[in-house]
Each structure stands twice: as C-alpha cells, then as structure tokens.
Amino acid sequence: MGSERQRGQRGASVPEAEAAGSRKPQSDEAHSAFTPPLGMPLPPVPEDDHPTSEFAVPEGLGSGGSESATDTEGSAFVPPAGVKTGPQTGQAANFPAFTPPNGIPALQFTHEGPWQDRMRTMLRMPISERPAPERQERQDEAGPAVPRVLDLILRIGELLLAGGEGAEDVEAAMFGVAHAYGLDRCEPTVTFTLLSVSYQPSLVDDPVTASRTVRRRGTDYTRLSAVFRLVDDITSGEDFTLEEAYRRLAEIRRNRHPYPGWALTLAGGALAGAASMLVGGDWPVFFAAAVGAMLGDRLAWLASGRGLPEFYQFVAAAMPPAAMGVALSLAGVGLQSSAVITGGLFALIPGRALVAGVQDGLTGYYITAAARLLEVVYLIVGIVCGVLTVLYGGLQLDAKLNPEATLRQVDRPVVQIVAAMLLALTFSILLQQERHTVLFVTLNGGVAWVVYGALHNTAGVPAVAATTVAAGLVGLFGQMLSRYRYASALPYVTAAIGPLLPGSATYFGLLALAQGNLDRGIAHLTQAAALALAIAIGVNLGNEAARLFLKAPRPETEVSGRRAAKRTRGF
Image 1 (cartoon, one colour):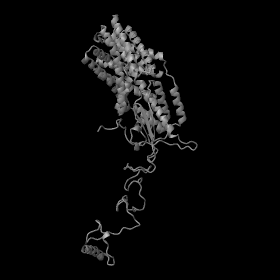
Image 2 (tube, one colour):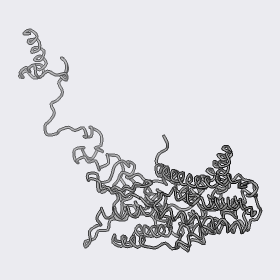
Image 3 (cartoon, helix red, strand yellow):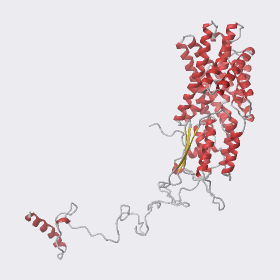
Image 4 (cartoon, helix red, strand yellow):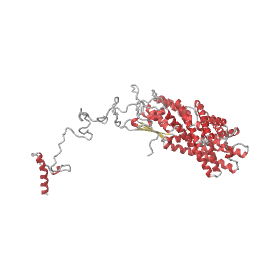
C-alpha cells in the first residue's frame, strides 16, 4: 500500500512540476476518470465570470461578424441568426417553428361565405395556425364570463344536434360562438348524446370544461333555421351581447311548431298516398294508403303519449298500413293491396337519420356515425316487426299478396312527377319546415324523380347508380340554396329525397320473409340497404361538389389550403 501511494504521488507531481514548479502535488481524492494521462497538457481553467450553458451559441456561429454572441440575451422567441424575419410581425419568414413574442397575429376571414364554411375552415386548421379572435377593448364593460359563454355554446349545440344536424356543422357552430366571444383556445366535442367544450386561457392555466347531454330529439326544421340565423348574427362580427343571445335563444325554444298535429296527420296520409301512386297505384289506392298511414300515425302518437320507446312507436305505426293492404286483399275488391303497404312504408323509413349517419361517417365523426346508423337499424327492425306480424297473419288467412302482379311498371310520367312533388311537399310539412322553403323542396323532389326516371326507366341505368346521381343533384341544389339564404342545407335536402326512398324493395323483402323464402327476402332487403346508402352518399357528394365549385372563405394572410375532413390518413 505504501509503495502504491508513493507511485501515485510521484505520477501526479511530475506533470505538475513540469507545468508549474511551485505547485504542491495533489492528493488521491483529486484523481478522476477525466484526468488527462501522463504527457498530456491540462485544459485551461474556466473563468468564473463567464459561465457556460448548453443553450450558448458555439464560437464562430451566430455572431454575424458585427456583434458578439454575448451582447444580447438568448430567448426562445428570437429567431436564430441568419433567419429572415417578416417586415410587419417580426416572425421568422422561412422558419415557422418560432412564435413571435406577441403571439400569432389575428387574421380576418372574408364574409363572402356562410358562417359554417368559415368555422369549418378554422376547425380543420392546426391549433397553432388558427387566427386569433379580435378583442375589442372596452373601458366601461368587462368581457363575458367564461362559464356563461360555455353554457350558451352548449345550449346552441344541443338544439342543432337534437334537430338532426350533422356533427361537423354542430361543432363548427359551437366553435364559431366561442370564437366570436373571444375564447380562441376552445375545443368543442360532439358525440351522439354528449356535447362538451373545453377552454384553456393559456398554457399555464387550468382548462374550464363543461358538458351537456342530449336526451330528447325532435324534428323541427323551423327551430333549426332559427338557430342558424342566431349563430350567423353572433359570428358576423357585430357587437352582439351575451344577454341578447340568451334572449334570442329563449324565444327560439318557446316558439310553437308552425303546423298543428292534425296537419301532420293529414300530411302523413298524403305522403303514403303519393308514394302508392309512384309504384303504380290509382286514386282508390291513394285514399286507402292515406287512411292506413293516418291510423298508424295516431297509434304512434298514442304509444308516444304512454311513454313507450321509439322502437315500439314504429312497430305500432307500421301495423295499420299493412293491415289495410291485407284487408283489401281479403275483401277481393280488386285494389292493389301491395301498393297500399308500400305507400305506408315510405312514410316510416328513417331517411333523415340515415343521411345524417352516413354524412358523419364520411366527415370523420365515426362514433356519432355508428350511433346514428345503429339508431336507423333499430327503427327499421321495428318497422319489420310490425309489418311482418300483419303479413304473416294475412298469409295464414289466405290473403293474395303477389307483388309482381300488382306492382307493375307503368308508363305515366306526368302522374308520377306530380306524385313525387306531392310526396316532397308533405314530407316537408312533417319535418316542420318554414313555409318559404316548401316550394323549393317540392321542386327539388320533382327534379330528383325526373332524373331517376330518365336514367333508370328510359336509359336502363341500374337503380343504385340512378339513385346516386339523383340524390347527388338533390344535395347540390340543396347546398346552393342553403348558401344563398345562409341557412342549413337539411330543410332543402331531407324532404326532397323522399321519392327516392326504397319502399318497394323493403316491402318485397318483408313479404318474401313472411312467405318463408329466405334467399329472396335477403336479396330484396340487401337491395333496399344499397339504395338507402346510395341516397346518403349521393347527398354528401352533392354537398362536397358545391364546396368544390364555390369560393371557400380564406384569411387575408394565407396560412394553408382547404383541409380535408378526415382527421387521419388511415395509417
């Protein structure tokens, strides 16, 4: 041990004696893995008044030849040397990762398009690229309370979602209201039954989150249009106070439906009668189908008043039209009983929920789309249960139900066009639309049937392809009308697709199942599902085509192009 210690002292003192003869030898505790070996010079001693940092710029970089690197204090908001900055904001022109000290500048969107286009454009931007809202500094008035703004956002979103609006437009409306009242770091979330919104004032503050559950849904497009006008007034850039917004919202909720209950019952009967004429029925068949549909409507209202779920309401509504057709077949009066049953099915097929579900799926809201489509499946199963129960009982009584002999192809285009327009008219009344929209919807429904008849009956195009083209035109015209009036596209689209609903294919499938022909029944029901999906996809394609050809709102300082609706690329 002593000899090793002597050798260590001798090895440590020789280099130091060569560097500085007056120094004392170091002790054993000074040895380290970082001590240079014998014969290597020691590194220079660092100066205490110039500490080093891992963020310091290395020598020879960043000085630019005029200033030293230690003249200015480094900052995360200062772009590195050699990066050019913009003439107005000072932000790095070719280095976008650096944020200017004053934040991202506020960008102005042009007001040429409706508010849903502007807000949809902002929602599809990354959060770092969204333009900040303009804050008007007022000395006599403080900004609105955040909880009240969030409550207003949720109430508006609840009315839109309960009215059948798509999830993307509901989210755009919620974000538009938040942006109008200065909540720029706000994230709304929309699902089938739950609405939530989260606001975080800054990166160091705790977020404020509120949610609301949508428990009841109603079909009232008049109320839906009023909510769209309210959102348009809030997001128009004018001084729209929070108290005035609450007052308008209370008036919207208190407004009565534009059509009474008896008018809805008559409209349901007329819809079934018009649908029976589309498939070859005559005037006696029209009245028989109308009576059966009105009885089903009253029975569904009775079930609703007793608190039964919507599934059983559809079961009750599907039974009277089918019973009317079976009774006519047993009476042997020579009427087309199958046309009566088909007309009743037209009044029950949930085309509105189907279109909304497919649209949510195509725009990336898969959870909401799955819930809507599951709702459609349950409603259709309810219709199937009601109709199959009656048809099975009629077959046991030897009812002569032969759809091929009764639903024959007839060439009477004028009668069918009038019937299609009447069907769209009555459908718009059932949806509680505003009176000034009824004429446009009626014409749109007539155009849809003309296109379908010209492609399928005259040109021999398959039914699915002809339905897709006709539904695409309905979506295109509806989107353009909604942009012209700065309103929702649903009132102009939903009722117009009524003549295209697969009522006859559904009836064929149900009758085949009741007769025990499983293969044939599944084939017809598959065709009905394909037609329904063709309607929904065609409407969505028409909407997207309108957005392609019309000018999209863009900020004055361009940040990016139009973002795709899909949230991911699938991998």
